[in-house]
Length: 369
Image (tube, rainbow, N blue to C red):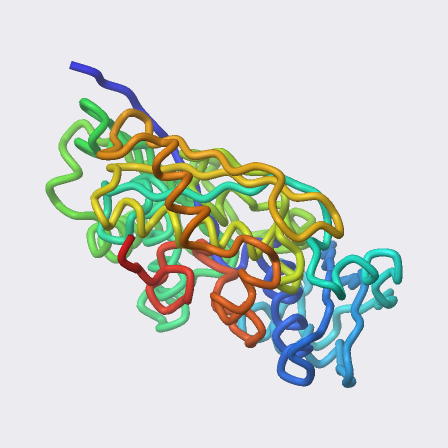
């Protein structure tokens, strides 16, 4: 019997890094609403009661950056600079320039906006073809936000993290070994009350009963207190949660972040395309799990390489699957953008609880292979 344990984490939308991702993607969406050909690469940095925007944006329109920042912080639920950040009083610094003409020269003719490697992955171990650990970590993080916003657990604050360790037997999820949840809360709440509420209203409402047993470890706020949070407790930065955004470490990652980038940046668009292809391969029973890698050169249209690994689960050889991919899909940046319809303001939908596994997004649809 082959037994091992695998762990993945997720974070709530109030985590300082995710706050920054959300601001960056909100700005991207507003640019695309005004100009579908907008070129956007914007970073957000959060520290204490201050937000810094920096990057390159070229588009036909005008944006009230400060309004987007403050509305985003407010919608997440922050409003107190003494314990996290205040949308009304926070300082906002803006340093936005235009895209370099050297980059535009290659992108304008359909080439990649940068060199790089991208991965896509899918597995049959969950209904949405995601690895079990990251899927469950996202569900717990989303539920943590839900009980806060719906005031089911009204004393919670926006910052939070989840972590799930899954026991695998013969490469299949058998049970959950450990659940870890850290959540920001109001100062007057006792640890015992917090633990009781999180177990009853978050964990038991989210995790299937058959995946938890008497040996499952549950840890709630292991330090015993989490009042100071958000950018006051820890700085935030766009693009620092790339493993949370993808497959929880179960598949490899090329290194490029997603948020704040328009679809000419293959870090984002190619990763979305490869997820679509890998998911369709698994859904069509060509493999139980599939990982795909491509590589690009700046300014060049076609990928330099295509790699597939089905980990010995394929009903066709990996080389046969590569041929299917090359014959069926246009992997040029222009081809990907057209195929997935990526010139639409959908990116704020991707930011939190993973860019993959959400059925409403175009790269999650399954096609016949």
